[in-house]
Image (cartoon, rainbow, N blue to C red; front, side, top):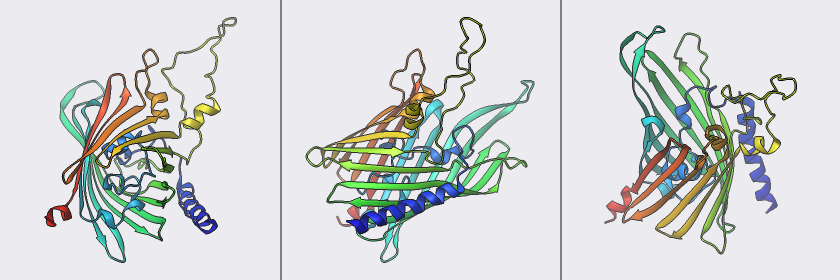
Length: 352
């Protein structure tokens, strides 16, 4: 037990040190290539949009943590589609292959289509329409170090096109995991989007990668059909709050001087890193997912009517040789994202 604990500590420390030494504390709104952070699968979307510790041989979770790739996923094919906010369409397809004594590889093709836009200059003069999209190729690798520890990595090569502006780059994810089947416990740690730009949108070359450090833990209850997850996001930076330029100004009732913005509490700063998720395992072929993203709720909620912003839910079921997942996540009272995933294994058809 002591030896396993030491190995777990060293594995997580290595991943975190790698992320912290390259971290530039980029957050939403201050980093480019954000399509690399879009939720790739319905199940992940239902769990709050972030989970690096869920392991049950689901190939749709491997982009979040490639160290969970193993031989049980050999021959797996996956198709994912996300109807995002404002008619943005996103998705990816993947195929997984295991190589004996080497590890498990997966190839994925990602895309994001933002639709058609009207081109206009600073005076409002229109000059036709243009399209914006991102596309990326991801090569994933996972291998077991022993019976409970695994290592993995993603290599992402992408091309981004917004009218006349084009960017090309390479990004890397490094991941590690611990899975103890007897204790029904899994832990994952990931450093995402350590990148190199081959071409930037403009000559200023100011684009930055959305680097992120994540740590998560998942526990299946022994005597209940419930699996719970806690994920910590953006650990490369403590304070994720920001000054809202549209926030209502406050004034001193006696001097009528404008008061400085209220400092966020320790609780608020802490929970902006937290994503909660859970699964109700009704049977081997059917499960219900749910999640809560505190930061998403704090940043996107409409104060007059909060609704279910920050909450997400979904379900998954098996139909013969196919696994189907659906999820919905609330980003604003004006709309939500809908995600569909279908996966199967070519070996299941060959055996028949």
